[in-house]
Amino acid sequence: MSRDIDVLVLGGAGVDTIVYVPQLPLLDADSYMIDSGIRTRAGQTGDFVALGLTALGLRVHHLDMLGDDPEGDLVRALHRDKGIALTAIPQPAGTKRAVNLVSPDGRRLSLYDTSRGHADDRLPEATVRALAGASRHVHVAITQPCAHALPLLRESGATFSTDLHDWDGENPYHEPFAQAADVVFLSATALADPERTMRRIADRGRAEVVVATAGAKGAYLLADDELTHVPAATPPAPVVDSNGAGDAFAAAFLYAWLNRETPARSALYGTIAGAHACTVPSTETNAMDLKALLRLTATP
Image (cartoon, rainbow, N blue to C red; front, side):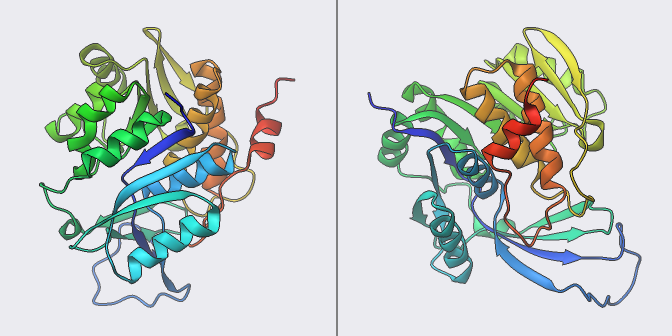
């Protein structure tokens, strides 16, 4: 079978409204004056992973549900402008959206509108089979339509990854994703004991590699039954926004992993791309390119 797609990104398309707030958490008040503007732009987790992988030269296809609405038009325009192939399945409830509150130090609070998806939403089986069968790898967002597609992905023969984001290690919704993927990303934010959760993922599922990102503390990598700490990379400019850093990390890690780098080297790629993302305002979509990444990861 021909594998003409390097990475199929499944799910995670939508729009974010970015609000730069004076602090997080916000103090109790009736109103705030936002002098930096309130802007809506295309780009949620699947969009940003697809963008990051494309910027690194991989052949990417994105599959998700989109509404026939202005938000969906923004997502379609982003993919068209960045040269990312997109298959959009009609979503009668409308395109997924969120509001991101961003503080001056770059921290983020995300508010997700769950009314744009339903438990019975499904991506067409024939479409999933065809695209996954043509892909070397599939990166799966943890949105509801993707949960139904997990058995099809295992049948496709492609490797696949997922990002559990700020999973607390207990919510059962995330378990099928954690147990099915070959590479599992998650944030350490909500984990009292990252190593325990990471080892449980590896023991219960099929993951070869588990990575827990920890922001300015770097990341924890579990591979070959060994847990190691990967130091954070130094951002190349002032940190303005952490939105998209995890997606940039995942994209760079997958680029390296698919090119047969070791898990440790792949994590290094991830920390550098994640640090770069923290210097880019949420209102922009500017992923690190391959030349810059290879220059910063070059072995002395």
